[in-house]
Length: 396
Image (cartoon, rainbow, N blue to C red; front, side):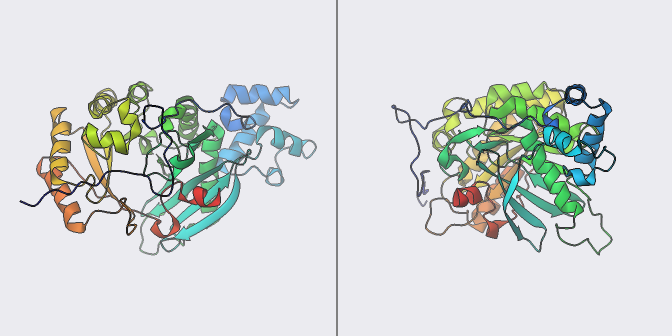
């Protein structure tokens, strides 16, 4: 029997910040920095009305502004002809201050994928990726500028955590994406009789940052996304996926929010020995603690959990790891989980390269044989640095 090759995780081209004891630095708290100006999307409908009165206009003007922002996807006063011309620009500037400035936009997949690079008010860079599929449009959004989880394979984690994004900065990514779709910028309409979604239908919090480390602003943003128009974006909570590397207490807290969100756990290894190196937060909450929290999410919400697993050649793609993953998932029950193996973007000569096709097929076969529903992730945007953080790192 040939010896199993084991490649260990390591950073390439940068040095991981470590504590005195050699463990990777983890940043859970956002550095104290000036926050962006308060925006209509940061406020409840009642707070918006109060702000309008405070600015010297009738309370109902707040709802008019919300209608423009959340249904027409505009913050341009010239387009708001239902507001009095006198003082209109000042009102819009106070209630809808600019939050995102487009730096770059890259297209691929025949125009059906757009990657945006945004500059925030303080110069921080974040990304979002817009993807059209048959019948749906998915937006991958960022929740933090940078990330404090310090994973050695992640472009976002190299510089650490700059700051948490505000709820309105998170929501603004969706509004800008909807505006791009409305302007016809996401490829042509389908000609096969299939359905074309006219706006973003699905959100995945898999962009820059660890969403659950920015918990309060994340939840405020999500509640604006699901609030019926014109007070919010009128999206379905079931079509919003929150991903985490395994902050177990926050996963349990998310289960109690009474929202049928989809939860995805970025696991990437079923054994603590490898996951400690691959996902540094594993030193705080081990594989079993993260899986217990994920199962708790299913128990409380009834929503099937996704397990994200990036297959990396000779590092975490061994057949025995597929068996161990299946065992751990089945120990907690049946029908509660779905595994998404993710092909890594190949980088020749790197330790971070994609698994061979036959190894990938065997990994999936073993999971399915054990009764675990498994779907190989369709990857988009490979030729435009599709992994979040790559574009910002290049421009930063």
